[in-house]
Length: 499
Image (cartoon, rainbow, N blue to C red; front, side, top):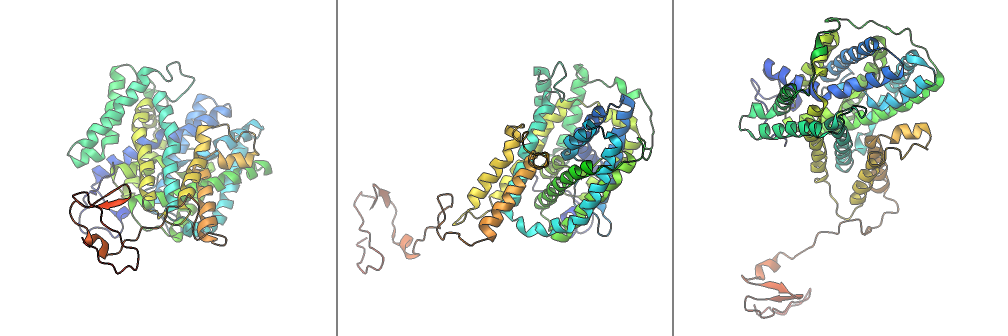
């Protein structure tokens, strides 16, 4: 569903698609669409961690506002960029889900939020030091790897969309109800209908408009509740170290370093993925700048009571489906996040959007990411090599945590932290198999196994010219229009063909 047209810009076209500038109104409208797309994902980690820490609703709300504020600043750093920091790509930043399990484990161990914040700071600084290593892996990300990663990103996000469509919380009495799924289906239908309209602006804003219309329908039918919007502070600045000064515990730091490694892997994949979708050049320098922005944001986020930051894969899907490639649109989304963090009342408005509405839109968004990956895989050469089995094994490996979420529960914690992520699992497998089969050629057969597609058939240029209308193959014989057999000369034969 990606658009072949691109938004019109004033003046000459920019050298890079992501540098396009749209009218101010359109920029903020598309930016708000990005905020709605990732809002559920960015508030979920502080809700989970805050609850695990035993915080009351007011303190949990403070964590949520802090995460919105820091996510907005991190997005601005990533999209606008400063020297050595920021990929200058349309990537939305927010609290990484990769660290939720580890952070709750630290809390369960009695460390408290202060220990979580200390572990995030130290681990992120370590990540900042090793970003040059990750930036050098660009040559190990050919289309056979990037296609696998992009496809897996979309597929691993589908359970998120399904959970949203069912209601978001399995503890809710109406979780999975027909009314919830019906609301998601209505939103999905609206996205498709709006996408089909001839007006290009409406088509590109189809996700946002469908979410608004779906919410209006939910209000009319009693499926949305905005009563809590007026409660609480209207304006609040995040207080530095509101939960106390961070503490530093070795075990917590070590476990968080593993999370940082996963985050670096996923962000590298997201940078490459959005580069493919935007159709812009992504080199090792740009990856390094993006990763440094990721790690700097993560290291500073505990100061304002937030956690590890990473690129949001679902917003990569929004770029793909709308065709709006401008990084300044995402910068506008980052500014909106900062405002939401400073104005909790606006955050409560967005939070009141029913989760099933987001689920209906998410089906299209996340499916688009997978489709973009499939399109990349279509460019891969499968002839006389092992690329086919690389793709098959890597995607299958990446689906294991999705198909069986408890698959790695009995493995060591560090191993589970890495491979519980389908994206990391697929990326690691695809990179290793690509190195094994395409970089280490020692031992490779000239005629690979049945997994390889055979060589192209070779037909002499003069052969088709000898055929006439009606000639056809039947039972292994070449027959003319009258059913008479045409003799086939062997290679090197000088016998003339009577036909």
